[in-house]
Length: 224
Image (cartoon, rainbow, N blue to C red; front, side, top):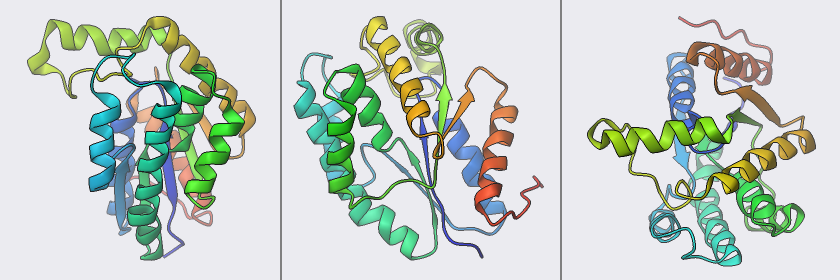
């Protein structure tokens, strides 16, 4: 078996990360690979408690530097307790968000500075970066359409939990996050792969598999 991979998925809330993570995980497991799926913040007892702190309440409850500090703490715990041990054991790791979320939301959209947030994230994770990051690109208006009406009009059918603190941010803030992600994709083109989240799910999944195949020593990944 080839070396284990560390893959992250990024994008504004509502872009479809969870769906694509599930498709990639299932695909890799059908190939006989062991896969560990994690999320940020979360994935550890400490991380889940931090998740509650940072995602509950109103958008103004946590100041930006406190917010990014909480995310960094959760990330440090996740990497030390889950990501690195899984990779060392030979498992692929797929993470729903990683440090690029902090760069986009706090570094750029909240104006803390991408370089400062990146330096901090690299320090607390001892420099660990994903082999590839899939950025699902979705406009702010479409993200709002996917999140808000689904919950407001029919909560019982909503496939996710109720909108959290960041999902309840203003449309203006969502626009800033979208632009922040685009800036990050330009800054890290070798690692970040931008995919149109408006495309059919199967088309996005195929593009994901093709890039993963290029990382697996050219091993063809034909769906079964």
